[in-house]
Amino acid sequence: MAADEILDGLLDELAAIEHDRWAHWQRYVHDKSQKQSDGSLLIPAELVARWEKQIETPFALLSDKEKDSDRKQVQKYLPLLKAALRE
Image 1 (tube, helix red, strand yellow):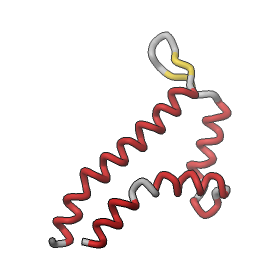
Image 2 (image 1 turned 90 degrees about the vertical axis):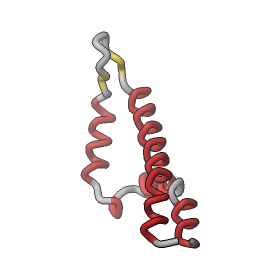
Image 3 (image 1 turned 45 degrees about the horizontal axis):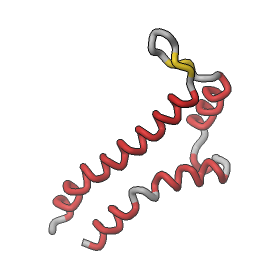
Image 4 (image 1 turned 135 degrees about the vertical axis):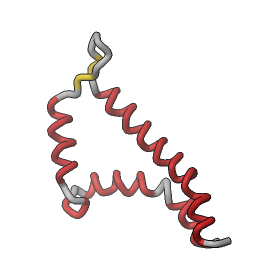
């Protein structure tokens, strides 16, 4: 099988993993926020500050705990990538 065909076949599988990762994060954000009467969400200031700091921090400068959290998310992609590389 050609490399382009393998990559094309992986696209939707990887996109499904990415959607699950995103949905998990959104559930977390919604759980940590306060739903307002108009349906909007109020995110606590301490979480906004923490997340803004993380956004601005390169991976290499994150704490070990934060790096492990990112690594845990990437591990969801590895089985598909390993299988594709074997093909």
